[in-house]
Length: 395
Image (cartoon, rainbow, N blue to C red; front, side, top):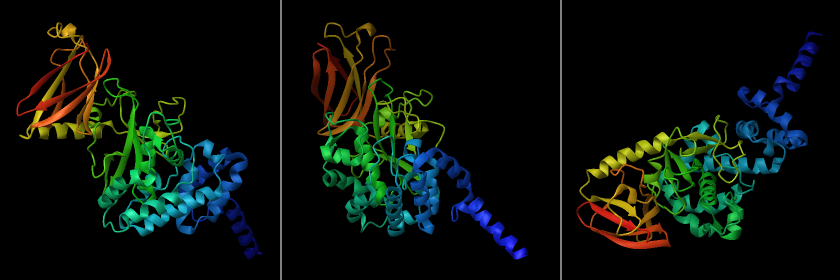
C-alpha cells in the first residue's frame, strides 16, 4: 500500500509541479500565466515546450514566458522549434557563441523578433546565408566584420523612403529591395543572431536637435556592447550619428537612446510609427553613448590631425552679425560618400557661444548639405590646419 501511495503521489506531481520537466523552476509560474493568455493556441505552445530537446527546454521556456500576448495566441510549435534548433546549432558550432553567457544568449540571440515587426521564419535561411561568411573566423570581432561587410550584397536591400512601412521584417524588405533605417537594423540584427552573435536594435525617438528618429544595431562582444550600422562594415562605435548620440538626453524620454530587449524591463521601446505599442521592451542606454562621445571628443580635441569646423546659419549676407539673425537649420557633413556627422545650427534665442561644431581631419575637403528657404543646398568646405568658421545662408 505504501508503494501504491508513493506512485500516486509521483503521478500527481507529474501532473502539477512536475509538468515542466527539464525547465528551471523560475519559469514555472511564468509559463502558467503565459498558457492562460494563449487561449486556443496553448496546444501549440505546450507542444513546442514538450518537443524541445533537453538542452533547449530552458530557451523554449524563456521565449514562451516572455513573448507578447499577440505571439502567445498565434505562434505555432513548428515556428518556435525551428527557431530554437538553429539558434542552438549556431551556439554549438561557432567558437564565440560557445562562450556567451546564458542571459545574453537567451535575450539577444535566441529571440525570433526585435521589435513589433511581422513574425517570419528567417532563422534557418539566415543561418544558411551567413554561416559561409563566418566559417573561418576565429573570434567574434572577425565574425561581426564578416557579416557586416557582406549583408548588403547578400540580401540586396538598400535604404529607401519608398519602402512599404518602417517596421519591416527581413523578408518584407528583401522582397522590395528597400527598407527604412529600422528595417535595415532588423535585417542586420537577425543576420548577427543567425550566426550566434548577440545583437539588438537601438535608437532614439528624436535627436537632441529635433531632427527626428533613427534606429541602428548593437552587438555584444567579450562583455561589452558596441554600436554599428548596416552600411558601416568594419566599424564599431563609429558611425555618422555618433556626435548626435553623444548629445542624447537620458532623462528626456523623447531624446534618450534605447536598446531593445525581449525580456520585460519596465521600459517600452519608443516606436514612433505606433506609439500605442507597449509590449516591446527596452533599456535606457544613453549614458554609454554620452560617456563614449565625451571620451572620444576629448581625445580628438588634443589630436593634432583634427581641427574644428564651427557652423552658423543666417537669413542672408546682410544679416549675419547679430544673435537674432541666426537660423536653426539641419545639415549633414560628408567626406566623399561617407557621412561624418550631422546636426542643427543654433537659432536666434540661443547663446551666441552655442555654435554647431565638428572635429574633422585637417587638409581635407568636406561637403555640407543643408536645408535653406529654397530647399536643399550643398557646398564644399576646405579645412586646413586652423579652426574654420562657416556661415550658411538661407537665401
